[in-house]
Image (cartoon, rainbow, N blue to C red; front, side, top):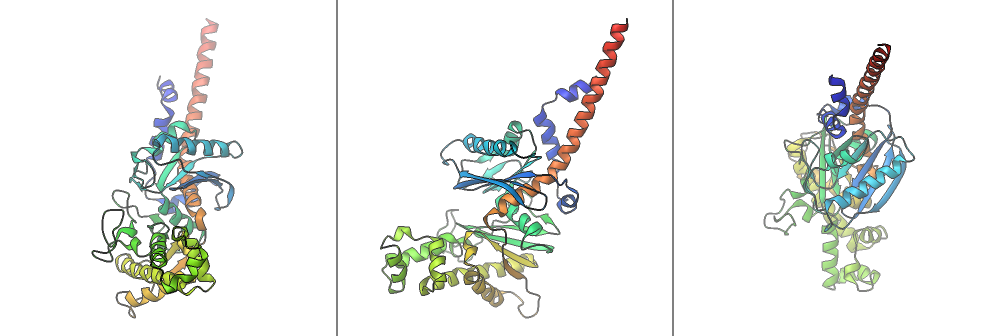
Length: 382
């Protein structure tokens, strides 16, 4: 009979079938998703952060470890993820796992097509982890996950059309419209950092020149400061003295700290980064017309030293300025944990479907056991 075949089918294949049902109906789904704890994983080039998150976005427990060296096999990173999930599962009733990966994730949210800081090339991450964990897994881009978290629990609450921009080493981003993450046909929408803003400008690691992230990112901020310091510029004496002449020790957080203390060069550098940020936002407003831009990532810690100049430049460069409503530009509220929280919350969408499938499997198991008992009783009566 078919019951036995249902019971013996590979668990991974059944789970994959359930996960493929997750489509674009996220807004309605999150309202009816089970209020169960899930694990969010944020994978970057230097760290892997994992946390158990409840239905209100509260972090119940978090763990953090270094990302294995990118020269190692993808399995090493997968082993790290599994260890973190199992560790958290020892103390929490985990119903699903969401992965926010720093890379391109395909439209089915299964494969990491490319991760610049890891050895993932067309890696079937969801299926591999689903085979090793007893709960369903969802994979998405880390910027998409962060934007979802800000829309659900942070600076983007109440917004129907939101664009998030993450300023870190480079620039990432995500688009939410009517409560749905817009991933594009192939799943790789939101790579705003590689819009060309200066033809023939600075070379970008992507291979092109003049990309936006070469003018408004953590890398751009540090590059400009180090160039001035290396040239022994009079305006850089403050930061040169701070690092005792070791130009390589200049970092983004250091520049932000000195700017807050009033260092004129550091303030000016953040203004420059902010002005380029405003130019790019104006371009995105012309294309997407959102109601709100949420600025996250490590560089956003500079707050009004960065976002103030960005707002000014946005108003100067916005097409149709003076004759159209202006989008709000706000700083993200959830900080570096946004990607983890968003990944966990997105995972709740598949937790519901998985629980339904699990309930049906339990019911089939019970029917099969009743059938087996009745058959044995009938045989014993003969």
